Length: 596
Image 1 (cartoon, one colour):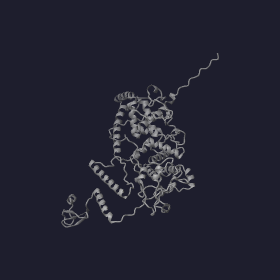
Image 2: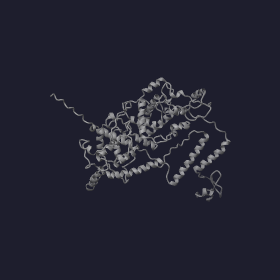
Image 3: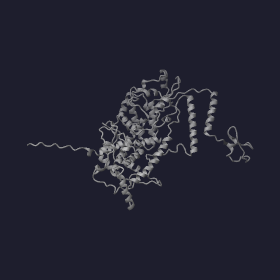
Image 4: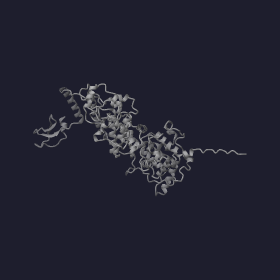
């Protein structure tokens, strides 16, 4: 074994110039000829070192006295969620979002939520009615006297007087933020030495899971609703689909949130069940929670969505036209569709939670639906008309060749290949996605040491397998980006259709709807009076629709990360607004009664 460790070291001895090395019991190299000890030591693998240290600890454990078990700091579930919101706000600020999102927007939204749910900023918070059974009144009183380091924000303390209640009720966004840097983490208290057992987890973890008093319980998906509501208030250049993509790529803290908690906060299994994330966030659930949160907080009307705002359909349509590699001239058609349907109106686009029949508009899905309707107007997408136009475009490209005419067939083949590559990459990333946290849940000292050993062994095995495969576990982690496709890169071998022309395929007339009755087909044949109750809008059977239409829906579904049925539903809503004037039946004129 000693020969194998010294085989690769060929340096001569500085004393006698011989190459005859040995390893002492202390792990240092020495010359067997002149017994000179040098500074070089034996290389030890991490896995071997971990096993050796574990053995040494197990042997020496009986030689020393057992340390007194220490209690962690007291903390509440709402304080844990506040800490997660803080980390998410800092991550968004790192990505370039307005710095006011942390101290002026999310902070005030969170305060209003605590007051509405009676968690804080009220005369008697809901959690004050419950006291841990293992702590007596004397120990609770002594714990109040012994204040530990501040790891949570004192702004969310339940000890709030009546004056703060009135201030918070008027504390709308942009009216104030955290008072100091130390307020970015909730207040916690060290437990007293007279307690009978070790503090395991939060104070109100068990009660929080069964308590039904709160109007809307906090959850991990709700933290994303807070983030999106704040982005919407600031009118930032991040849509909900972009936010969820950043979450999936771990640029925003969401999965395994317990690893972001301070070490002094003990987390047990009951807390882990509240904060644990076992599924990827779903678009329709987050946008539903966002609207419910806006109604619960009783927020005023949000800032107006003007033509220069990122959420305006004209801006978003240009963004998604670039990403799906469609001609720039198609933006003229999306502009006219948005104008005709009234979806570019500031009043319609601006979110107002208290307005009657209000909804949180899915701006990205709405923009994609406008593009699909424009494609149906120009190319019909009925598996016949678009291929005839492709033949005409290919003939013109062979004869003229000055400015290429957009060929739908070439675009279909190019995007189909890109879709398969991206889909395979996303499937591999999801297959390698790790749901386990590096932080060990507090199950007791014996169980904790066993879990630490298992985690270390798993990590060592992953490293060894990655070396054999020639890859690293974090090879798929890339920088933050809101695009799946990039058509500006050189030498990709992919055709860019941005500069292609639509001349000869279609012409812009004065009336957008002229002649549409002859060849335009509707995505939904039945009109609904209440889209929130009807279910057939959410059901999508691809066998009943043309392949070209299915392909376009699948493409945008991959880009946005949503179900095809949601995009199909929004397309039906755009078509209903577009053709509502044509579907109105003219009232019959009543015949005048003759006097004779």
